Length: 157
Image (cartoon, rainbow, N blue to C red):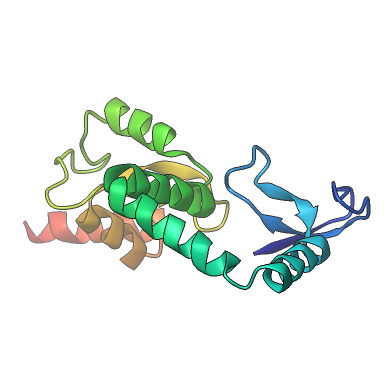
């Protein structure tokens, strides 16, 4: 994913332009512009054709030796990318919810709780079990539709 940031200056060439996203950076953007990054990679591979293979092998070895740490890093990266929260923030939310779904209050059974968020604003609302998360989605996140459904169920009970 690239970002056009007219105010950002490349640390290598000093120009503005497109920058890659980088979750490991504080601001989420790589300090080197796309053009410089591509040039660097091209030069690296021209000098050393095995550089990419060595990097892939180092990554595979790290994953093999640190499976839990790797999975947590992937989760953290995914939460940052999709919802703008860290794994630590997720865990704090989970603790505040007593390790239960924010709606039905049931603990998760087979999988982690889903991050519920407003699809328009991106604001995170809480953590939900699969059933509650899907239900809100099926109701198009509409409070009116959810109320109508609750009224319908109460009338038939």
